[in-house]
Image (tube, rainbow, N blue to C red; front, side, top):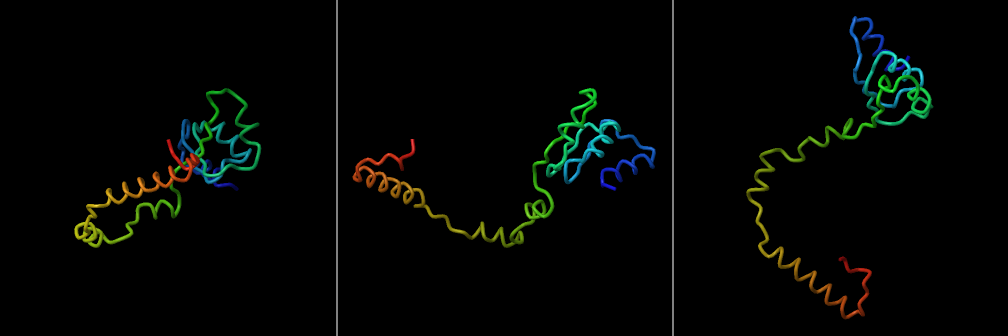
Length: 135
């Protein structure tokens, strides 16, 4: 039994309705789960990876258009990527100390500008090779 089927049975056992509901699943649903989602009235199905079956082309393309669930590829951070995205790299006190005690290089832009000018001068002397010049 697939996870989608278990969710559908759980909804039915608790006398709940999923008309216009949203289903979140790891893979896009197989042919049978697609049929069940469509007949139960699920409006959107978010998935992380596509299922190798024919559900999108054959099952999800039959019936009334307004009754067909939208298959939407999930975009965003999932699993440990979500946790890593929001886990601080440094304790807050150490981060504050780093920002408050760091010294700013007041000549940073001067160094960058000088470097770019020197590269452009070398380019002019090399015979005008335009492949490295950005417009």
